[in-house]
Length: 450
Image (tube, rainbow, N blue to C red):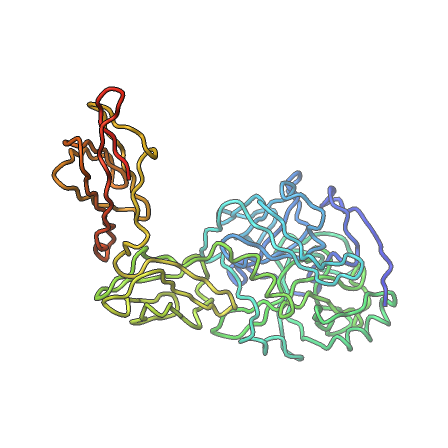
């Protein structure tokens, strides 16, 4: 069913216009310390420092939140605060970051609340400690976490009592059961007949009883997580919408963006800085280690792959040790890691000793004459570390590995110039070029020609 749009301006977020039924907090929950949910984020209005939405840390650069929290908002208007439990006394563990960039899901519909997620890139990186940690997102391996009937936890600083305004000072949480969207739809037909249609991008939790437990105004964008003893919390939802002012008692479910339907988009947006770090050269009879950088420890490597001129000697969840496959292995190579969240990383390198096939020598000009007491510059292309070879009819003056100044000591015939490239794996074969020496007709100087 379609909803009636109710727009209100809240004093705590005076620069933002938010739909009342879209601003969701924790009612009838319990106080909780940030160390128990260190991924919790408070998104605040930079001009007055007031909390208006929640979020979750998903890596050291990005926060996940609801699209309706930040749609149309400039990154310069908000700050992201982490590492604290009390709004009025955040303490020494507080970390505060400016937003660098806001990315709203391209399919977000502010009329239906469908695809209600966004990610925020911060300036700098989070400093992880016991109060500041990323949360693991649901993946194909953890789909059981969103099973109907599971007890899940939602948290935030929103309203603690239905129909009573006011952001909570103490961080709150509540444990609620996952219910079917059909059950949520039936309950909303009673308490909010004009509610939006529930789509497959939405997930619902029950209100439990007449006292109504769940998310409420101020909790929007915050995490819904599945918890198991001794294991990482897994975020399965983002607080999205519910009955206006959280009234309706047992017919007041909370609705979330269902991350299992949206996590691929999230991963594509937020892992662009993850990488494999290693060597530029991989040789035969020696090993090189390639290591995954900038991912949380709960993301592992499910598969390492290498090009056919490279062999994996050993590998684990964050690194792989490789070598060139054969003594004559050479050319371009790569190592690739498939992560447990579906992201694929690749690092390219050179295998074996360099090839001479792409080496060449050019002069600073075609047919430029070299007059008496004048040097001609030769430039090597196709290699970074070059060695030169000459016959005895040339004086040479080094000007860097990739270029050299030469001067013929004879006025006729030809000279031979050789180059070879060097890498960690050894030298390429020599490649030779010949240049003709002749006199100029103008003043008796000499020139160098191919």
